[in-house]
Length: 297
Image 1 (cartoon, rainbow, N blue to C red):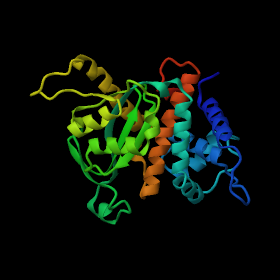
Image 2 (image 1 turned 90 degrees about the vertical axis):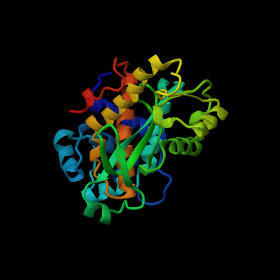
Image 3 (image 1 turned 45 degrees about the vertical axis):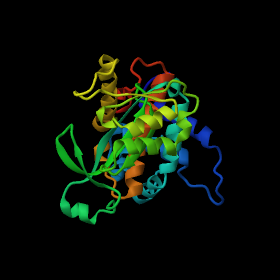
Image 4 (image 1 turned 180 degrees about the horizontal axis):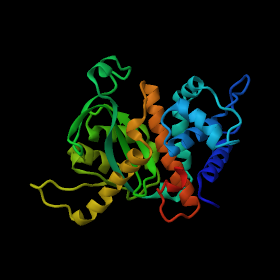
């Protein structure tokens, strides 16, 4: 099987269409099916076309015959904003279809998702009350928006994720995410989570220990070093590499969302694009599991 965009989109469409089956709703079926909508959204993220209007002009010229029908910009935007549950469902479905899902080592971190810069934009934004001000230590700057809390395998396969106000403690978000999605902990004896120093907390340690989960993180300077300190740094760099893929190749920070539904759908769209690439690369035996090079042109 070749590794290129057309092959990935074809395999992805067939996989989603088989998974969804016939629509259960009554009435005339939509001209653009849910499977086609998700495939179209993945292609947009992989090719890095952020403008929806430009994307719908781009498809007929560069992917002729790939989609029988394309909606207008407004229709595509409405369908995509309403498709967040579907996108999350497909992310999980593809993740479960890889051998990476059974990995008993996870890495966890959060990264800023900026939603506005100017003060007037912040004051009139529909995200007010959901987004907020936070501090990005890696760039030494404040931002207004959300934080993406991502749990993934060392290969970068998303296990579960959440968007939260940057003022909410990372440790509280991690516990809330695991409580909200307890299925991810099923059949994982000896699960190990690797995090940074920000996840130091007795409450979190007790929470994870009660569920049979180990948490490794670097020690503070005034404490005894972790026995596996020399192993933590290389693994910790993996989550930074995943965030770099999301931001550098999938334009996570340039999502363009202006509402809660819009931001959620666009973040899910990018996570799905990365998951689809990992799924396809794993199935075709590619040497680099998270490589997007074959699909971004």
